[in-house]
Amino acid sequence: MRRLAATLVTTALLLTACGSTDEPAETPGPAETAGADGAEQSAGSEEDLEILRAVQVEGDFGSEPTLTFDQPFEIAAPAAHVVAEGDGEPLEEGQIMVVDVLALSGDAGETLQSTYADGTPERLPFGDPGFPQLNAALTGQNVGTRLLYAVPGGPAQEEGGEDVPATLLSIDVVDVLPTRAEGTPVEPTQEGLPTVTLAEDGAPTIDVEGATEPTELVVQTLIEGEGPVVESGQTITVQYHGALLSDGTVFDSSWERGQPAQFGIGVGQVIPGWDQGLVGQKVGSQVLLVIPSELAYGDQERDPIPANSDLVFVVDILDAS
Image (cartoon, rainbow, N blue to C red):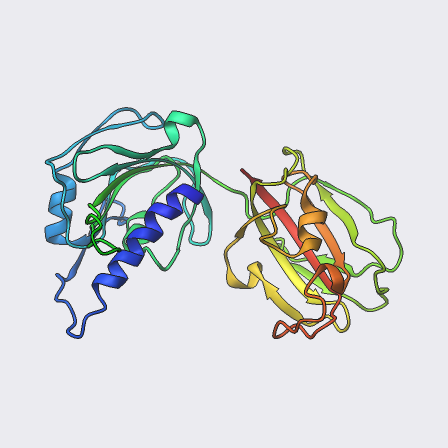
């Protein structure tokens, strides 16, 4: 979701900057409307929703729509409105949605981003606390939903720069990523590995009793997926569970947070043990990584990880793009 995130995060920063005055800004109260089944269809102030509903959206789901609206498009606060409800899999908070996006500048309607044009849908977490209106509008919806999302502009970020116009986005939810590894179980052949037990939902537990200290990176596939091979430079979406090899203390877990994580792989964004151990694996796989300290954080303490700690991870590779 690199490009979409850039659009949304930039706007969030603008809103934060605009709100950092001595006096709190007065904003209209939120309004939400529901469909016949009770699912929320809109989120935002009634005034902003009226502006958003006036946007005409033409085109079939899955193809780039045409948006017609008065220019310049201006809105006071973020707002979201479902244009068409989907009939696919129900959306659940914590899922990573696969979305096609058309983002337009509110000034003259020029295209800022279109995933339809290059065939590269974005990945968007459902439930990101930074975008409550978007989350509220999607609550109770399904795959196949099309919605409009609008964010206000803001002042120039540099002296002498131009003000940033509002942004209008049409978002098609085309799919959701799986929440766990799916494939063929693989029986470990190496001795001295930590033992991994999976709960019904796929959440792993790591038992380090009897595990040996690694002299080099250990990569053991536990489930072999059927997806494409992960390549250096891609963004991967994963579920992971990390523990200290010394005593099994869990120090980080996307499972416990309730939402998969996304990282650039093979580019130094994560520890070397991840870069070396996950590039070349198949999407859909579950991989056990036993990482010596020199391929983790070395002699640096990273609370709650002591210095010179060997680490063990169970990583479910859900997607690579």
